[in-house]
Amino acid sequence: MGSTSDIRNNLVIELNSSLYKVVEFLHVKPGKGNAFVRTKLKKIPGGQVIEQTFRSGEKIDDVKLLANEMTFLYADDTHYHIMDNETYEQIAIDADLMASVKDFLKENDIVKVLFRESTPVDIEIAPHVILEIKETDPGVRGDTATGGSKPAFLETGLKVTVPLFLNIGDKVKVDTRTGEYLERVRD
Image 1 (cartoon, rainbow, N blue to C red):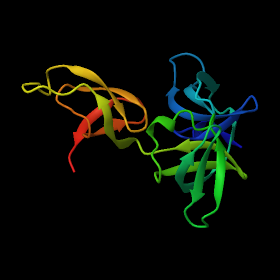
Image 2: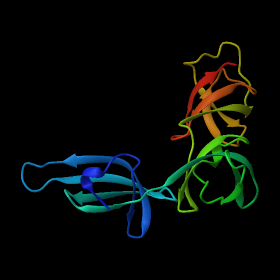
Image 3: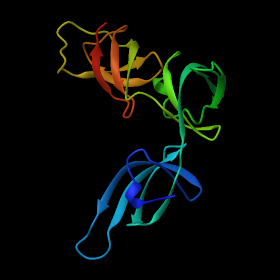
Image 4: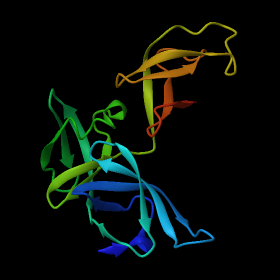
């Protein structure tokens, strides 16, 4: 049990029998009245974002989650199979839990799985991933980085908008929080 003074980014709390991760918070001390904390909370799992205001000093139920680095092995129709890097134990995670990260995962990628007791409740991946372009229109001589953009499909099936000069086989860095192209990566 904590209080509003313990609120920080990535803190996991229990609210109305659901788990939420603090995405953003702001302590507000108005000229009149009592102070309060305004938060944006992301539901775990699911990803719905809600806004919640807490009175200053209000008690909150913070939840301790165990984070474990694991290796993504493969996916089938209903589950994603991952392996513990220390014990080599494999577990199957429901596809629903992986919905927000599935477009960025390749086989053998490292993911952080958050467990509440022995149940996986959330998956975290790196803020940027490097993926290869598998399908796009060909680049034309004279296309520049400031010229324009075109759609491209990456090796995971993710569709992003890339500059005209990129071709099939090029590797690009993608932001996993927004799904946007960041830059070309040279080997």
